[in-house]
Image 1 (cartoon, rainbow, N blue to C red):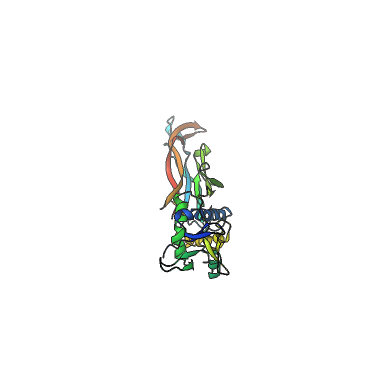
Image 2: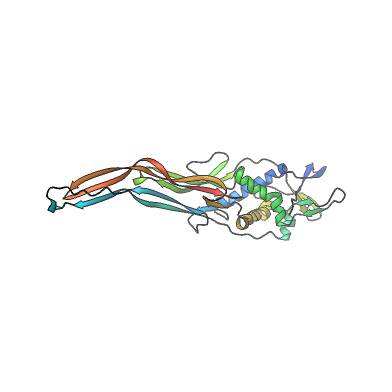
Length: 304
């Protein structure tokens, strides 16, 4: 619908004016909303990404080549002739499959009373007609705050989102949610493990507190911190609604979106052979060896 930018107090408690917030003024509120969302994910709440479940994100498979062997019994009818079998090809197997799932439960839009008590006021008028209204339309919240919050989570500071990596990512605070994929080479000769990491915080860019309505027709600055009513009662449920209904902050494997780390399934790219004769049986075998080549890549992606 439209941007409904909140006011903020400019001045002191005894002498102040109201000014409309700019994107810079709103930066801290957007950041604190991402911190609040990260806290929900870290507590295994709505929106979290995990392994197992219904597979609405995708799968990653760890495969490998395996040892193979052929044999022939000695054929006494041919005297001293040798009865060697042919060399076998390598076998293959899937050692493990990781299934990724994300909870995407819808949440109820805030009540009119909560919008009034915890929301902000915006200017609805012109230079000659001045009206203040309480923001109430979901589309206005999206246009004013949520779209930029989501964009910054995906392409900005990444707070409130996940990465897969073999070590802790840099920048800000990341929490490991455990190992999610292990690439195994033949007989465990080489292993690489990817963990799932959640970014829980970074640096608050600073900003202003929105001004709202208080009973008695009094203006009141809303607390913009991640645990305050403005975020917990209004903005966080709306963000969850964007995840559930509009595909925002949804994860997939090898689909569309912004990359958040790639898990690789590799195999040996050569083999060695051997042969022997024992107890009247001829044997030939093939064993994986050599360097490693990529069989498949599984990239975790996030959408806006």
